[in-house]
Length: 312
Image 1 (cartoon, one colour):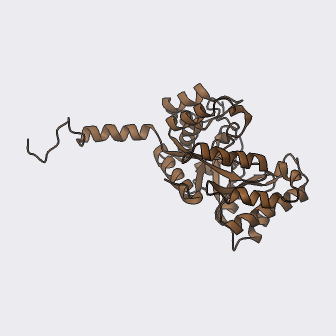
Image 2 (image 1 turned 90 degrees about the vertical axis):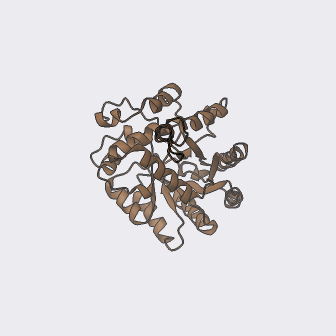
Image 3 (image 1 turned 180 degrees about the vertical axis):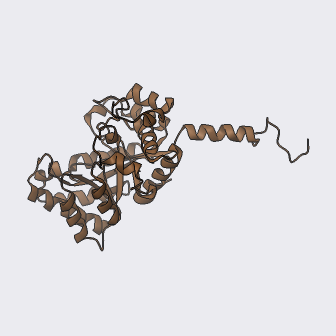
């Protein structure tokens, strides 16, 4: 054999390169942009939860801050797991009523840390009305202004408040940083409006629950969301992706790999979802979009690194 030819025992032979590529594809490179790892449900085994996520291909996880306390706790966790965990700092609309004098300065202090990569989870929620609407709007606006001031992206929460969220964002349009509608559950029309404003959409296991004719599934099937504006998240411990849902199309169930289902079914439940469920979510999104799961995984990971400035 000529010296420039490769035998099958060479690490650079076509056969071995093919095997290496296959192993790479089996383990996606993923970024979970929203996991509530400060939740007490992870109090006893967070090390294992994070290791399982890594084993499943989830390289980086953003820990969501939803109050001043959880924002500080999320930041603390980033220092225990540097390069793997990142945090956000925000006041959820449910907690807007707790906003008091000095909150803005305290939130700014947390948000200025380099490990904190976004302002939020903040926004408006008229579905449950845990805080008065006028208070929600005031607290939301303060956080949008903080994001503009610091130049940090926004992680947005919106339920039954689409137009009011748009109104607030449009008032700051000239200075608005990158923004993501976290756990998007709206309609095609709402998706278009957010995309027209330059926003990104975060998708979760909610697509297993969606039974509407004009919701998340339809949006993905019709290709309404370009891959360069899509992000993925588990919203752990919530939004468990029920892959056994009766209304989930057969071609979507068939797209789920044994490896992803093993992580999902062995470690995740309706009571406690985990970041290791993200591969199954990505495979379902890809099936609805009629795209290879590897393509969706790579695109959404790249988007997360770009939007939030995560280290590679």
